[in-house]
Length: 217
Length: 102
Image (tube, rainbow over all chains, first blue to last red):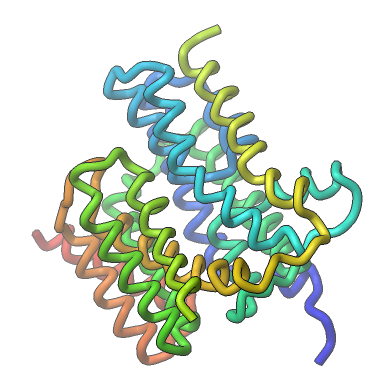
């Protein structure tokens, strides 16, 4: 079998980029509704490149939350990228600068499709998928921020259900043996239990701790 | 600088650092085996947590709405090994349909 290429990464994530574009549009629209100008949401999508964190920051600002509260909510949501970055670190070679730049293309989706299911990752799939997702996300945000008021409501289109569905579809092939199944159940239970008591983002980080099951041998 | 720009810049730089920490500090070196068995379980744990939070939460509240029916329909599609795009269309379509009726 030949090595996967960047194009394989683009292909792997292609169906998700449609959902990402739609969510990018909704982010642009919501950011404008929250009082941002047209440029802020586009710059945020181009630099942060993490949908849930961006939505969190904007919604805290919209509710009249402080700059610190909005930033912390977003950083908590993106904190999972520290352990996620560690998982792909052994497969990203090259100079520090090149590693730094390519690491920015890590999102849940590019990381999930790059996973080979045994704890190893394919860097070309990661980068190809990350680039496709980046284009869809920033492009969608631009459309939403510049012309969003002409479009329909993303909730009416049911787009908010597409993301849990995609994470479910990405999760299913990982459940090949007992340990990943246990980790998934525990992660889900921890996250669900914390939703009412922890700020958005924290339940995901806490759920990630289910991976410590791997210490049991 | 407006509050919005401060948040955009602060979140942007924090995210640069969070994403790059592993690859820049660890790049090229393999993980110790004990750590990699922990790390191999990160994907299922985080994905399951994402499914749950995105399906039933709205901020700090548990909100059961039309989304959950969409996700359930998607679950059946996943179980039947439907292609990913079809799974997403089923999730969004089911949710939109139930919303339109309700």
